[in-house]
Amino acid sequence: MGRCIRFMRRNFWILAAVFILAALVGMIWFKSANLNKKISAGDKKLKALKEKTNDEKDRSKEISELKEKMKSDDYKEQIAKDQLGLIRDGEIIFKKSDKKDKTGSDAENAIVPEEVEPEDSDSDLQGGDDMTDTGEADTDTETDNN
Image (tube, rainbow, N blue to C red; front, side, top):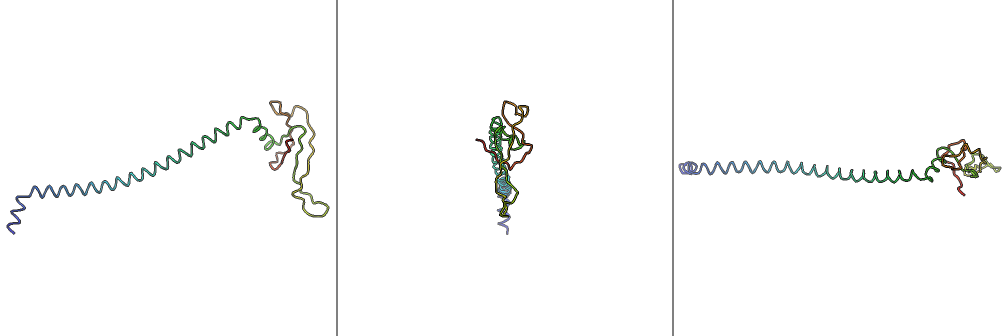
């Protein structure tokens, strides 16, 4: 036992340095594991933000394309027909009929032309388009654009 005490007295500073070094290594290992978790969470967040940025860029591109499309006369005419029920002079509107034919079967799919008389030029759209109000804003209405 005396040898052990003499060894410890001579090498006290060495043993203290080894103990402190072991404690520092343990703390660094613990902190690095914690930092790795934070880095991983940050990487996931960064990836999600990049995906969101790409989605927003795509959405912005679609909005720009739609904005350009909305400036066209064809788009304006289609909206006037679909939402406002306007037609050009001389166009014929075809609507589905709810009437039964003479045989008694349903004629739901039968298409019946509706006659539309042209009105005065007061009902024309701006820009000189020859559109007439049908009085209905039926979205199921199909038009013949001949």
